[in-house]
Structures are given as structure tokens and as C-alpha cells.
Length: 232
Image (cartoon, rainbow, N blue to C red):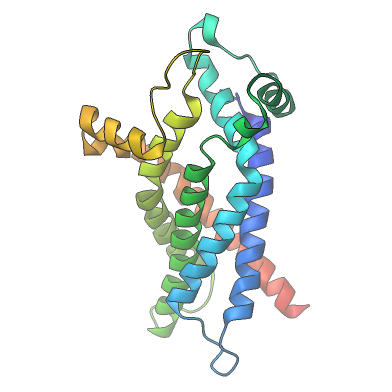
């Protein structure tokens, strides 16, 4: 049940702090000084840049997390039995080379760019629309509503990438054998061909069930931090 917890904590620490911090920096830098507004296009661009850099920083822990969580589903003879994220990273470097820490990194970076752009940009845009149209004032209700909407958007955008990323990262390639997938595109095509397009949305309900509450906590906390920094 708790397999991969240490890797999850490290991954979220590296990834989330990098992307959230950089997104705020870019938003501030790209906001029109005269109108004090930021276009949706620039919000999306800020999310793409921040998400990509954050993912690159957190990818080694991400690979370890995927492997540790999937280990229990493998036959006993094929299990890696990593005891911690540190041991997982050390063994990957020793057994497979340092490049193994960035296996599937293109998928991780692409996913992070999509998630950050869709999640953060949609949250800011939806929140501003709610306030500007007088539906609700800038408060907890607005933040929660915009958060749930942003979580749904992010889940729809990211789920296909999650399915492909997990399959690529978790494939076990023995010496002298051919890998089951030759990259992300090959994995996507083989998955759709053999299982249908909806295979890319396997696990969507658990994803949205996780994304919803997580996104609410994320943005409500972020709003409080913004308020503290503004008052400070």
C-alpha cells in the first residue's frame, strides 16, 4: 500500500516547488504593467515552461516511484525490491547507467508541461472569470470551484500521457532482448491498436478522484501564500 512513498515525497518536493515557484515568477515577469493583466496565452506559456523544467528536475525520483509502486504486481523472480528512493536511484545508476534516471523523461516533461499549463492556467482563468462576471467574490468558494474545474481539465489532458509513461518506464528489458516499446509514440500506437482508444483513459476515475482534492488543497494553500506575500 505504501510502496514508493519516499520516492513520491521526493518527486513532489522537487517537481512541485520548482514548477509552482517558476510559474509565479514568469507570471509576474509577463504581466502587463499598465493593465495588470496576463493573457491566457501567456499563462499557458508560463505553465509549459515551468512544468517542463520542474519535470526534468524531478524525473529520477519519478522513475523510482513508478518502479517501486509497480514492484508488487511483478512475479517474485522479477521484483527489484527497492527499500528506498535512494537505493532505487543508486541501483539504477549502477545496473543500468545514469541515463536510466531519465528513462521516459520526454513523456514526463511533456506530461508536466501539459498538466502545469492546463491546471495553473485554467485555474487562474476560471477564477478571474467567476470574479469578473460577479458570480462570486474572491474568496474560498471561488478558489474551491476554480480548483475542481482545473483538476478536471488537468486529468483529461494528462491521463493518456500517464498511461503511456507508466508502460514505458516500467518495461523490463533483459540483456539481448528487444524492448516491447520503441519510445512513447510506439507505445501509444500499440496500445490503441491492441486495446482501443479508451485504453488511454484507464484509471481515469482514480485520477480525477485524486486530482480533485489535491488541486483544491494546492490552490487554496497557494492563495494563502499569495495573500501573505502581498501583505508582507
